[in-house]
Structures are given as structure tokens and as C-alpha cells.
Image 1 (tube, rainbow, N blue to C red):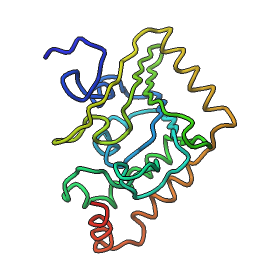
Image 2 (cartoon, rainbow, N blue to C red):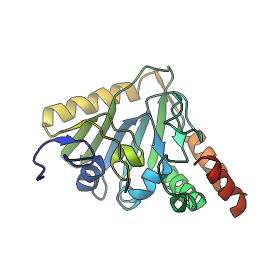
Image 3 (cartoon, one colour):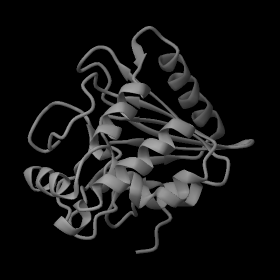
Image 4 (cartoon, helix red, strand yellow):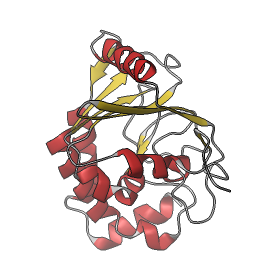
Length: 214
């Protein structure tokens, strides 16, 4: 169907990835709230994300950095694996992890809330000079959550926000939480764990680690 709606559900109303690809420009500044971040979602959007000026990423849960399947645990994590991908998509994990770590070191600051079950909302805010766009709803920064899977995307419920005043309110809300003592910077720990995924690991180790997480 022709999508004139502001809903993004990864189905008949379009995907969150389409929103991001449409709104991200060279030099964009992004602010994201999500419980998960996977390197495979990063890889799918690598061209767009490589062109941004900066990203502030806020984890909605204090547990991060792990190889835990988000479909099988309540722990939220900075994921190296992604449920539902074929083995072929897992094999370049080392290269993708390195590219993601390099990108984070150059352009990304990551914080996490200190208290579990404190922040449940998801938000994607994009600033391009004097223009602002935002999306709020249920989608995490994963392949399925953004609608990037070729086979089995999550059915989500997100709403694109294009009102200037509402976008300004969302940015102010994010800024207040970002600068509060309820969050802590975890950028270095994220990068360190990503580097552990590719440094001093031979191909056989990566292969068996990948099989373990299927």
C-alpha cells in the first residue's frame, strides 16, 4: 500500500530502517534510546551511519555487552549476535565487530541507565542543521526491530514525529536524561568488548563461537 501514514510497523506501514535511511544525511546528529544494539543492524546501515557527525546512544537497561540471545533472556545487551540470521551472515562477525568498534571510537558516545527496569521507551531522533525528525515506539536497534531481516521482521508499532515542537520536546527529554546522574558512560567498555570479539581470534574460534550463538 502507499504509505502516507506516520506509522512504522516493519510491515504494511513501512520499516524503521526506511525512516532512518530517508532522514539520515551527511553530518546528521543522532540521539537513540534502545534496549539493544547489534553489530548486524549497524552493518546493514553502515553507509548511512558512517556519514553522520555524531550519535548519542542510550541503553534502556544497565546490562550490556554480551552474546545473549535477546529472545531468550530478560537481560538487555550490546549484542554480537542476531536471532534469525543465516549462518552466512554470522561468519564475517570479526570484520563487522572491528568496523563497528572503529566507528564508535570516532563518532559515538554510549551511556546506560544505572537502574534496571527504569526506561522502556525507544526513540530515534535525527537533527540536520535546522531540521529535526524523530520516531518513537517499540523498535530496538536490531535487524528485526528495524525491519532489516529478509525473512522474519518483528511487527512493531512506531510513530514518526514531524511536529517541530514535539521534536524539540523529545530532544529536551533526551538531553535531560543524558546529563542526569541516572545514567553512566559505558563507551569504553562497549569498545573493549567489541575488540575482544575480533582481536587474537582465529577463524575457527569465530566459527565455533558463531555456532554457539545460533
